[in-house]
Structures are given as C-alpha cells and as structure tokens.
Amino acid sequence: MGSNIGLENESALHAGLKAYLAQPGDLLESPVGGYVVDIVRGDLLIEVQTRHFGLIRAKLQALLADHPVELVYPVAAVKWIVQLDPADGHELGRRRSPKRGQPADLFDELVRLPTLLDHPNLTIVVAMTQEEDVRCADGQGSWRRRGVSLVERRLLGVDRLVRFRGRADLLALLPTDLEQPFTARSLARQMGVRLPQAQRAAYCLRKLGLATRAGMAGRAPLYRLVQAAEGEEP
Image 1 (cartoon, rainbow, N blue to C red):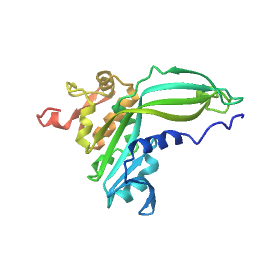
Image 2: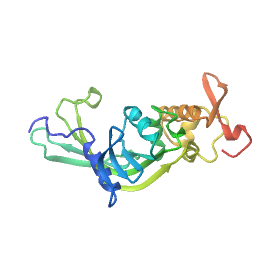
Image 3: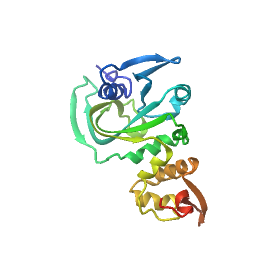
Image 4: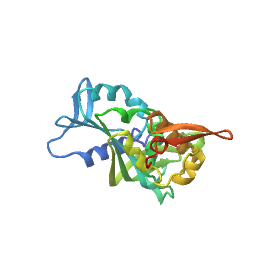
C-alpha cells in the first residue's frame, strides 16, 4: 500500500462534522452566491472550517453580506493517536494524547482574521470534539515529526458546541478574576495556556477593541480590558 494510504488531510473530520450538524431538510454542498456551502438551512449558512481561517476570508465576506453564517471550528477535547503500518496501512496501535483542547484554542485561528466577530451576521461555533489523529511513519512527513505523516483526523463524537455571536462573547474565555493590567505572560499563566496562545489572544482582544494598551512592564506590553478601564467588571 506504501505511502499513499491517506486521504486528503482533514477530509474525514470535515465530513464527520457535516454529518453531525446536518438536520432533516438541510441542503448539503449547495451553491450560494458563487460558492459551495457545506450546509444550507433556510437563510442560515453553515460552514465547517477545520483550520486556516485565512483561506475562507473571501468566501465569508461574500456570504455574510446577505446571509447569517455559522462558522464551525473543531477543537479536540479528547484525541487518540493512531499509528498505521506504512507497508499495508493496518493499525499498529493507539494511545490517548495528554493534550486536551479548550474553547480558548479559537484564538489560534482567530488571529488570522482578528476582527471576524465584528460582523453582525457571523456566529463562530467551537465544536469540542473527540477525535482520532491518524499517523504513519512513512518517512514523508515533516522533519519536525521525524518523517511521520499526518494521514487524517477522524471524528469520534462531539461533546458540546460553544457559540460566539459577537466580540464580547470572547470575554467568557478569560478568567473572571483576570488581573488588571496584564501581560501576555500573566494572561498565559491565568488562562493555563502556552505563551504564544496568550499572545494571540491579547492581539485579538486589542484588534476587537476589547482590550487596550496600558504601558509597558519592562519589555513586555501591558494590556487592560476596556470594561475594566471604564470602571466596569471585565
């Protein structure tokens, strides 16, 4: 079977999410405004985007002009790593990944289109999923993965859907007792995330007008939530 055992990256996850979200009467893969939309439910358009929000920028701009749109983004709350034999594709083993995703992982993609939630017709839906991450040590993957190829992501189930209907909804991803002002490093500590993700979160919050620069702490920029700056609860 060789190294051609994989499907197009993420196609299985995309198809699984569409099947999970679809309701009786929905139109699947239907043309709207010159684009093919994953799910059409009356006037509502539902698009599944497993990653790379930047790739859907033009499509969203066109669809949002005339329709309410739900952009569904999966985050793996539970992930199983499945290893395939590069010779014949049979399963060699599976293990549960220690990494657990959370809704705040949305910032990792939102940073590509930080003002996306400014549009009144858009709702972003984070689907907290259980997934299989299928891999194959065929020597053709990234050097960072030591040649291991990512074959596909498979949907096992959906735990819950978290909806963000406007920019202020992002504040629910922050600690209720977030110290003011804060740096990206202190934000990372309080959110329990890596520094790069906290830096993306701070960038998005500032671009959306939810946070403002508040000076420097050494070489680190300080931020303050706009509500806190106005004497309100963040």
